[in-house]
Length: 96
Image (cartoon, rainbow, N blue to C red; front, top):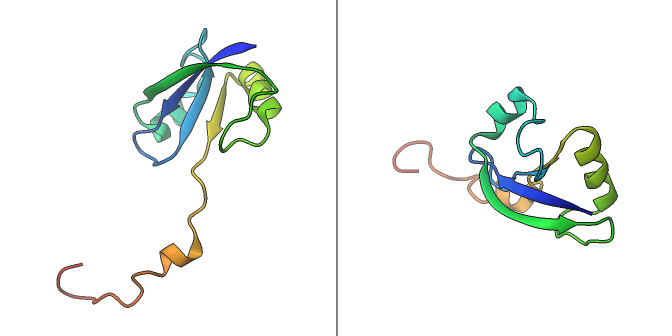
């Protein structure tokens, strides 16, 4: 079991960074931090391979990434196609 710190991105909606609480941000590569924006701490939680998480299917992969790379990046879910087509017929001029 490890204590996992979870950070939210200020640049990408629904992007999260999972870290070992002991290491904090020290093992995260600088280019990733630049893309991620200023990390906002969301919470800390104990993490085991049996723990179920909402949008992470493979908790074992998360734990392996934390050990090997020092972080796990949770990408935003894909946008639904029907949401992208809502405003296809919007006017080209005027208020949008």
